[in-house]
Image (cartoon, rainbow, N blue to C red):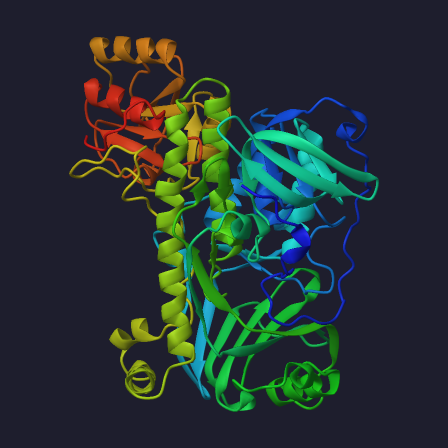
Length: 577
């Protein structure tokens, strides 16, 4: 591949327009890399390009598993200077991942938990919801959502990576050229102290929505750009609005256009105002215009401190493949979605969690390199789902004249009177853990829960103390986990012991409130939450991967479990059970 200068690629941060600099971001010291003074070309097992939330989550996940890697970022800070708080809503699955990485407590202490959402049309409340009352949220040890400015999470990840070691963070290291062949990838990197070249076995592209690697590799992708325009206002109030997610489909104080209202950390509210398609970005983000808009919504006497203001426009993109030779695309490098439903940064976090354990298993010699193909199987399916879901929301919020606009008006009118119509109101389907239905690393069969996420539910350790699913995953240290529910026949127990000796697998017997333990490693599940989280009933087993997804489920400890383990390690190419 011919080398391409990095300067030919325009920079972007997912906002079409940016302005303001209301946030003070931490800055990290530039340390000259050792390759600058070495004449020997160094080959690294993993090079992560991009220090946003996706790249840092991958770095932290690898560091937790003790896998060596380097991360390069052209800036010297987290976030994007002058580009607002960006992502703010972090879903339960992301919070479960962050808990496993050791930063959830920091996020929970800084951010704002919420579960109640209210949707309005005009002056009428069309419907409301409480996510804690929904079965797919209420069992986890993590809340449905925490709102916090994205740069805080990125800073927590930086601190955690430095605590764990193994992964080296290189600030002000800018990728300027790239090539790859059958032996390795070669990266040319520019720094304030000069340029250097390194080799890598695997390159992770976490550079964002205008990825230079994606351009250099000529990665095909589908793209859609609408004419919807929005203006963000991050503000503090002297009188606090409710700490709930409020959405207006048609806000009378915003010319009957949509409005979002969220509380974040530091008592800062994020208010998103839908603008006219032909709105002038400079005008709508002027402080006096923003204050007038806020006064219409909250009253003329409202006390407001404006932290940041910036207009933006969204687009949707999705690549056709997330792996290109030695390069893995993740986060916004692979897909770009409109912000409705918090499906942007959260899916980047899931991308990183998915790939980390697979890279670790392959580099440790515990899995076949073929396992890495399942990253594309699974996360491309998730990307396509999220693009589809957010595009539908975008069309509801900015309908085309004709049938789309008629449908929206009919849905709003019906939802005001009839509960059945509330599901037709689409102001953003909130992000959930995407299931995998076509993965080569999962074993599918009738009635199987393979490809489903396991919530971080609680159980009881043998000594009576409380544990969580993440405790078991951390104990497994990157190996597969077999949970066996109920009594074990002597032959089944012997098979499990043999499997744990012959493969990177750990086994735990799960009992009810009574019953004698037959295995040294056992826990109790008196309320059945762990069994429910694994989507199995009665005497059964569940094969849980390091990312908290089910690789397979079954009833009997037999050859099917062996096959599922082999497939989870990339040792079988077929997808049949």
